Length: 80
Image (cartoon, rainbow, N blue to C red; front, top):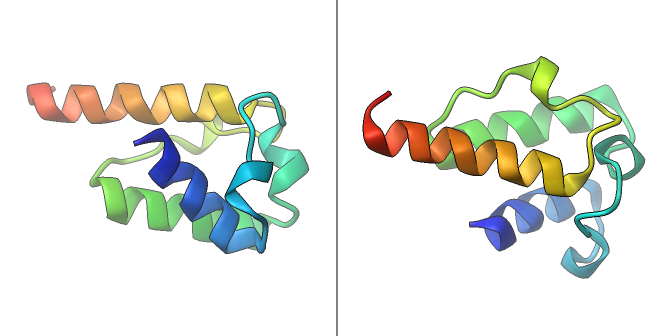
């Protein structure tokens, strides 16, 4: 799952997947609000979850974003 999300992010900003590391800040990778919105929309559609914009702020690391999305998927799978 983490690699799929990294791939979505990388494709939307024109980067290599290897450059989307856990330590980098989301805002450092995602340059514009339009890129950010497109990434979040694609993740929501691909994973079938509703992402809270406040939880995916520019100062969060990619690792924190991935962990948050994993938690959303687990909640969805449990029917919560």
